[in-house]
Image 1 (cartoon, rainbow, N blue to C red):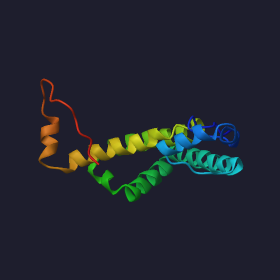
Image 2 (cartoon, one colour):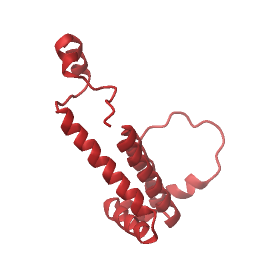
Image 3 (cartoon, rainbow, N blue to C red):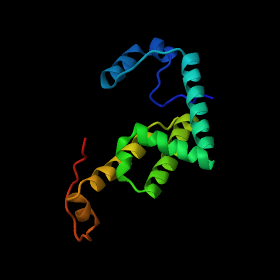
Image 4 (cartoon, helix red, strand yellow):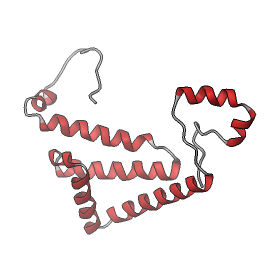
Length: 145
């Protein structure tokens, strides 16, 4: 069930080639965990993702998910009702991908994208500018933290 991430290092990798593993450790953070614990974590994530997806398929569940998202992400108040539904659908799909396919980055990207949308919409001076037509190349874009 648990797909091994491409950056995972097994104990055999460590015992066969400790120098290569040490070089990778210099480039990124590692943590040591037992495979059965990782499988349990993956199973829990799959279960949670499936519960959210099932919940969102009913009208009352959709309201519950919307309410939970508003509590967890206070900035959703700047989104329209349709945008909040889109955010919920995209987030549930991304969580499902994280759980079922070990694609963890997508959920972060969905949250960051919708937060950026809310940030622009919340700023009364920036939002009209964002809606105005543009022409040409404005150069490199710097990501906001």
